Length: 412
Image (cartoon, rainbow, N blue to C red; front, top):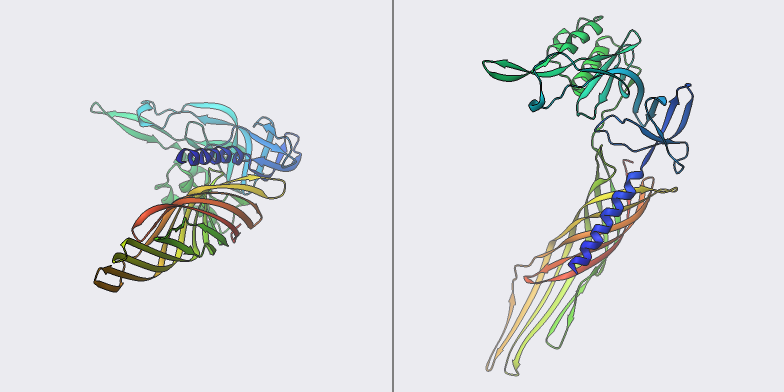
């Protein structure tokens, strides 16, 4: 049975990873003849600047490959790229591979550059495949590389990692129409955050705004409401001397969820907190030896269930909305436990009845597999939730749940 569940989980994960690679966004391109075309662009990861893109007029049409030689620019959402012939600095950044030459290793290439700030003073970024970020400015109508390099410097037969910060002098000349930046340049670092802040401070000091400013890509968090029904398939026992049965098999489920969408992934991580109904358990056990010697135990308990779900969400596009797969873990605990226990004991001439207090608890945990459909802010999902059920220190039992859930995302 465990192998069967593992195969199901493997199938879900494999299918999700295949389907979720096809996400697209509305975009436009401008070709070499300066003709603008509206359409859709396929998702690409932001770890490096793309060397090519896939674009199509129709979201579900045939996508065509475009390289920097083919188009002048493209834009989707709030990400704007241009193509240009520029100098690329090729020196390594890893300490173990540095050389002792402070001079730059430059090569001319045509690449895509992302516009970070566009205006009277502009900033561009290129994230190279060598894991080195390069930055450019527009000076006299030409793109200029802000030059920076790490290299080794030997002192007393020991070497140290030092930095050639020529870009500081370049920026002092480039932003020389204001004197308020001199203190900022001394603390400047060669990274996106530091350079973006410098340019924003420049525009603030000039009491103006850039024509365009990109929005930093971060993990996006959305939230919403979720509700539906859950069917608890408890295993019950009915014999002459043992009865173990439950009420509340079909229960309401409602709560809230948070979605964490990572900037370099198509899939997202969801966490849900749900109230999943009231459960009542009746247990009767008769340890029967003979009519004069036996023990009867009756237990009535009830609790309200709270479930926490943590799962990966894999969406894939359709012409009308999107389908999705969910794979993850769940855990259910309880509150407002109420327990009534009666023990009747007979040993020949001795017979006693006791009302007992039990240290009662409930826990079930396992994993969840879900599939559903989403359009705009609304979604519907069918879930299969197998797990292990623990109650009142009785041996754990297999528990299978099925639920139908509806959700509304406030932040989409």
